[in-house]
Structure formats: C-alpha cells, structure tokens
Length: 348
Image 1 (cartoon, rainbow, N blue to C red):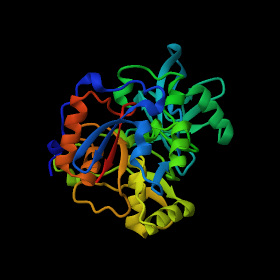
Image 2: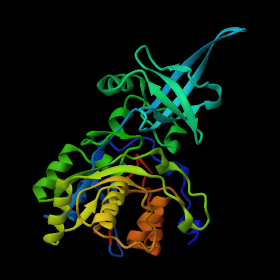
Image 3: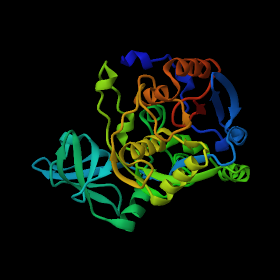
C-alpha cells in the first residue's frame, strides 16, 4: 500500500480560510452507497434516522500560539528578541512541551514574557521541542492564556493569513468543554444550536467523548509504504455514560456515527481494547484499508489533505475506489476543503 495511492490534485482556491456563515449552511456531500448527493449541512435531518447516535468530541481548543520576548544583558548591553511559541501538550512534570522559534536562541533557565501576566521559563529541551514552565497554573493560567494567546490555525490556513479574534469563535465547537486540544475536531464546527435542535426533534441522539487533538494531526506521512507509518499519540476518554449510550444504540440496532475522525479513532480504540466499555488513555491507533471497524456505522467528516492518514482512514471505511470518486466529485463541483471547509457524510 503506497503513499501515492492516497494522493489527488487539489486546486489552491478550494482551501477554505474562513468557515461558512452560518456554520450549518456549509455544503454537505452525502455518499450513500455508490450514490453521491449534493446537500447542505442543514439537510442532515433528512439523512439521519430517529434513534441514530452521533458521537461528538467535546475537547476544547486552547489559544496555543503565543508571541513573546526574551531579554538578555551581555557585554554588548541589553538586548531583546522575539520568540514564537506553539504549545503542544502538558507534561507530567508540570511543564508544557512546545514548539519554540527560534529554540536554539533561548537558553535553559531563560524567561520568555508573553504579557504583563504571563511568562514561562525554558526548563529543558528534547526532540526539537522546548519544555516551558509557566508562572501561573489553573484558572489563572487559563485566563492569562486566553488574553495572550491566539488560536493555533492549521498550517495551510496560517500560511494564508494570521489568526484573529474571530477564530476564537470560529475554531471552537459549540459544545467544547474540556481544554487540551491544539487543533479543532473540525467536522463538529458545522453544528449550531438550530441544527442540534432540529436533530433532536428528529429523534437523533448525541453523546460526548473527549480526544485532545494534538499538533501531530498535521504531521506528513514520510514513508512510502504506509503500513510502516507510526502515528502520534493523543489522550482520550470514553466515559461510562458515553459507553452506555453506544451500547444502547447497538442494542436497538441504530447507527453509531462519529462526527469527525477524532471521535471515530477514539471509539474504535475503545472497541479494540475493551469492547464497548469506559476507556481512558493515549491512543495511537492507525486506521488504513484493511481495518475492521468495531462500532462505527458511518462518518461525518471534512475533506482531507492528500497523502494524509485521514485519507487512509476514510478509505478504510468506504473503500479506496469510492473515496477517489467522492473526491473527484468534490473537487469538480467546488467543495471547500480542510478545517474551515465543507463536510461529507459517508455511509458505507
């Protein structure tokens, strides 16, 4: 299985840099069997059945991009330098692992000041990342980060424009509850209160799980034989309540449809490890063609990068030939791609 099997040509103008307004007005490609339907996200109510269970990721994206300065006194006098930081994840020792630019210019023990309230000390480095110890913890840290930080937009958006205040709303789901992600579960960005109300009235049920999406989600696959690729690990949790909701859906022969690849990867990790039961830990599950799904009956997801692990995941769910037809149709009819783009509903 070669990396080139998951490649396709994507015109630059189809990469979305802002979401649809309102959220639920985005286009929705429904792949039902071998038939493709061009719809809107609001049309989900026509494709989901009473009793279907949507699995939603309630992770909350932190404003993980920080811009600061480090000050230094030397024989040449006082100097300052700009430092750019992207937080990745908290470590067991109380520090944060982070991408620091330029890392080689910051000395161990040196302080980077991000705002009047927020600063961090470089405690060490490993694997090209800095380990930052912040001056605040808990709610004080969250409040200061909210003021000083910017949303960590994906590289393909950040290359086109800087993050702004609107992204703090746009790049967050309406049910975000548990802080820890540095990337959004983007299929969920299409939901607004009106759509949730319409789905509830239809009899569609929802349950929440948590997977803190890491920056590794944007790492390219660097091996030609995709089966040898090593996935990054992300922390997740399926609560007892969520496991019970999934078990009940299966018992009544309703469909379990994760919204987003993050929710899918988490519930399939659960199924593989413990069956349908509470689960918590780190998952590095890699889903590619040949994978046997344990609980997933369909998927709502955005359109993914060429040669990415997410292209491999959707190919595993609905088949490589079918995915090629879906993506050819999406490109040919002008669907918007990636995090702020349009959505698809894939029904095997």
